[in-house]
Image (cartoon, rainbow, N blue to C red; front, side, top):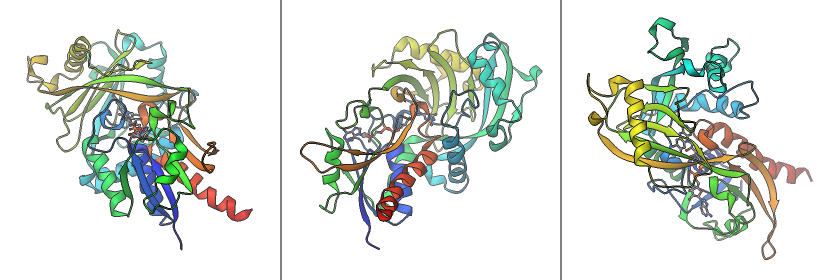
Length: 368
Ligand code: FAD
């Protein structure tokens, strides 16, 4: 069967996962075009900065439209962690605490909902249990524990790229001003019949997309060499936009301490005062990060980092449309962007949905 030419624009976790699942159908000849590739660290490239772990989303409150994507993603991340150590993902015990102060607010409600019998993630995540009150540290009034995954993004992104290359995908650098320019960049020199748009936050300014409902949520972390061997998080801090989490990444990826979530901030530089607060709170939450009796001076810092989560007012956009440009042929575009703080934990669900829209492009045409 003659393969159809497809260009995937973007080489973050969304573009690479979508390209990989497209390859598996064997129906497409795929070129990935991107300004940034695995190995790069840039404020315009969210994927390398992620923790990254899998946190159950807030279900049943209308807060998350992503649940089905996450339910579809977990099995694959779990399989990779169990069967393919070279992907840089491992399984890890994860403890999520509710601060007594948060008992009556929205964050506290999240932990309450997590404990509900009908929460699908309670059934899906291995070893899910509610911790007994007398096992909780001071200042906490509830906690759940489960097995999650922790992804070493500096190994996982190159691993995704290598899987794509093995399946025949061609990867090229390029900076595009308009989404329809992508159609002319297929490696065969024949035009692509379809473009998949996985440009994350850059879809805000990319010609032909210009999605003004996108905005950044700035996240700052500290990556340290200390190895607590656990993921831990709490519902909040006394600072509105700050949070406390630690995650010990697979295969020497360091332990990520976070963090914050500052809407509409584009600032790419780590704030040194925030860095101190992040490290202090991490040691308070997880004293085993450092030797007994020691504080943040015992943290061995690899770097302080800042990334921008690609937030979108109405959540992730996975849609198909025809994009027109006055000087080009109309091009079918499948969008897969706007994953906010959940691009890894929705990656396979989102990519499967995008692949279904790509497939639909040809089945619909065949029916006409
Ligand atoms: P990106 O990674 O930004 O990739 C966009 C791609 O498009 C790049 O290759 C870029 O070069 C390319 N591109 C853009 N514009 C153009 C153009 N005009 N021409 C050519 N190429 C272009 N998610 C989780 O699931 N779990 C976590 O624990 C987690 N923790 C996070 C912690 C932090 C601090 C941050 C910042 C994010 C975190 N995330 C987490 C969210 C996750 O990182 C993002 O949702 C995800 O990386 C988005 O990936 P993407 O591929 O859509 O976009």
